[in-house]
Length: 479
Image 1 (cartoon, rainbow, N blue to C red):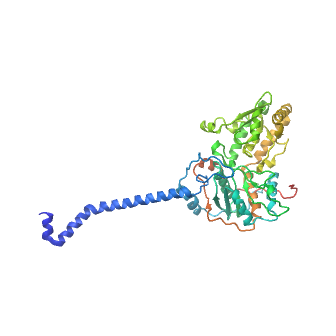
Image 2: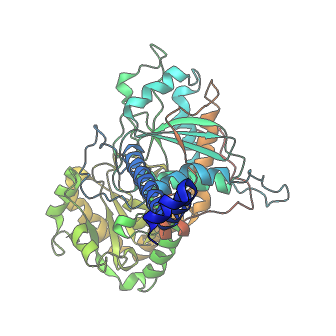
Image 3: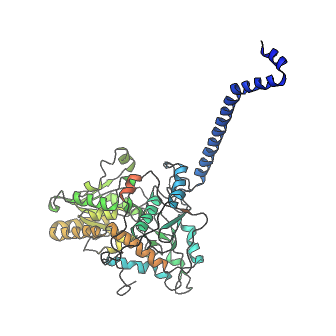
């Protein structure tokens, strides 16, 4: 009997049975196809949404930000390694899992005294001591800043990014702030500040007459300042590492440099001055220094550093621990100050510092003829030769200067770097006349990108067993 005959004989009931059989054969595959199609469409939608979010989310690494208009640089070599989903977990989910901060034990060891140059914190913040810092005054720093940083409750860090920074500066700087909160849990005060991660200071003293108008300058944090600027110096990013040039976190890097410096006794080291770096950074000093490259006439060896070539060769010829083979090491500022100062001082050689224009926080601890020898820029090559001749004729005195320079850097452990950050932020927070709140556009930061995870983990901090060192008072402070 055919199906058609059955339908005619069985009427509607037979037709219903026939329809159920068709459903068992065709409805299930159709349903699965429809469901899979819906899932694929949903996944595609989520992927497009994430990509759109990625393009709009301002990452700490600065991958999709414009270059700073006041210090333009090439953005072509940046690569986005962290996915947008990773950014979401970093910005939100990991923050929700975080436990509240725990205070340092009352039974902790007594706090050591801070180095004397910490007293410079008072000088840097002097312009706002009388007027204090209002929201209006603070807002003026926005046009010079690459980012805004807000700290709340001793454990919450918010960052509002405006412009990209060179390489990984912003990321390592924010990482350092996160480690500060971890080191002194619950102790860092609420604060609202603007930070520029480029080289040269921007707040010129000639534009603000504190004695006449009483109007304070906009407070702006950066890595260096000069006597002609109000910019507030802050420890630079390289203390936590500089992956682009193979520089390790400070404590580890200093140990390597010191160990390398002890492989050759001072008297056995080359009796000339040595400099190796990049002269192509709009630095008149370094261009002039190239003229001194004559070991017989000027007693100096000046080497050009090609960082692209070094990167391609695995930095085999630029290990800092291998560059302490000379009795004299030259420090020459670049586009502004240079992070190389601390590595040169760490060598234990006599540091020959060419008339510095810029100040970083640690350079305030330098004392001429005690832990370095000054070099006159107006008579550069003869001045280098004269310093080398003096050192070679007075080996014991020269070696002592080198050792004191190295000791200054050994005393500047990461303990002291965090203490400087802590006291600077603490004293700055006392000047705010408002309660800090993060702007709506700021993102809470809990952890960093994966790109430099290994080097970041090496520079991570643990809660301190002591409180911060004791900041020198204003007594004995001379502006």
